[in-house]
Image 1 (cartoon, helix red, strand yellow):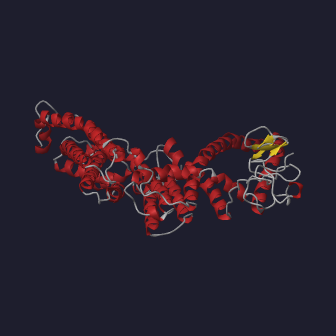
Image 2 (cartoon, one colour; image 1 turned 135 degrees about the horizontal axis):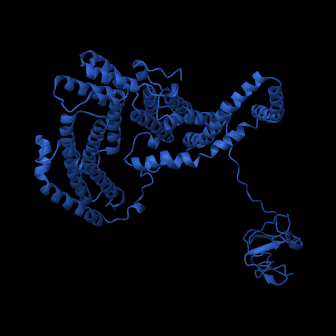
Image 3 (tube, rainbow, N blue to C red; image 1 turned 180 degrees about the vertical axis):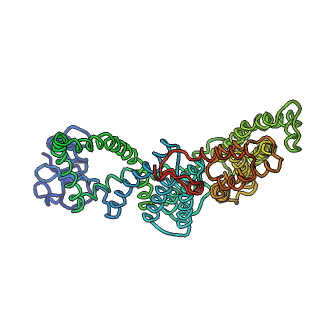
Length: 563
């Protein structure tokens, strides 16, 4: 063994200190390694593998060094420390499991089986709201506003009897709660930003799903203490007792017919209920994971969110000129369309029916196509906004001008569609579909106006204003008893003789929310119309249980609590 390297020392390191063993080879004051020295004539390593030394076949880094016996020092590999969960997080994990089951039992099951929602869904949503209010990182004014708003829409589920409105109330309340988890996680996102779409993707997708699996870790952590041991022992005891209990039940059933009848009834109905409960628990687990993940990720957020969300300049790959030119054919098509149909579509504004068409044919012709075209325009504008390259961080003037042009054309289409719908309503009255469609078109028109204004002045935060407008309009649609308003409009015009194309039987399309209005006009109806109205009220007494019962049902005299 050659103990000296080319420089006359034990190694080529500037460090004259001794190695891990406390002394160099042959008592010299340096440490031997395999960088410059050689062992048995093999320069740089002892295993024949460049950059590695070996002992017992295990490789070590080249600079590991060797002690006086030619054995590499011990290499310590840091282990990944498992996550630690607090007792509070374990408790909320168990609560999330219970809420997942309640969500399926009270909201999803009645919706899918009975096609109804009511007190059950309202209670489920209020429980979710309470959970998010308790398991939160901070409580500022924005958080309190979102929690109160979610609670209000949750309560309205148990008041309103219109299934579509109930469903939308539940969806909106859930979105408020999940977005609130995102908003309280970091100061930079407490207020709605311009990058609302990317923030929404993070709030509803990235954040909850990234921490969904932590629910099981928190549950396991909660079962390690005395309480967890007691729970496990209880479960084990119940499992052990199953065979003996079954045998005793069979013997007692053979001994007494009355007891046998009871056991038969339990086996027929109880087994089915147990299987249904097991399915609901299984489906509720993913819901519980999503709920816990949204709260857990909010609490443990460490890095601030990017000012641009996840939309970086790397995503803006389309040159501004190319993006604008791609929208030019659309504009040309709109010009040709309006020029060719100007007489036909102006008829809707002056309320004159074109020759050879009925009101129904005229109103329906192209209405939903116009709505779909408006959504395509919205997608094109989104493409120009998100994927076109910018100049010094600002939109190119050509992109802004094209955005304004598309907004103007779309607003003309929406105005035409609304004028046709207004003409249709003036002849045939209101229905749920006509009301909801008109509401959506008005909302869409406001959206395009805000997009156009933000293109003119980029300081306008269109997403924030649009969110406020949506909350106001959706609150009006939810809380103002739309079915009652529809019945009031139609019956008032029908009784005055200005609505000839109407039949009292059409009230059956509405929910029990129209009952107070129908009861008010009952004495004014003719004998035939009164009979039709009574039949409509009977139809509102649909099957179901307390989970699909509402306040409007109680006002209409419907009793489902005995079901």
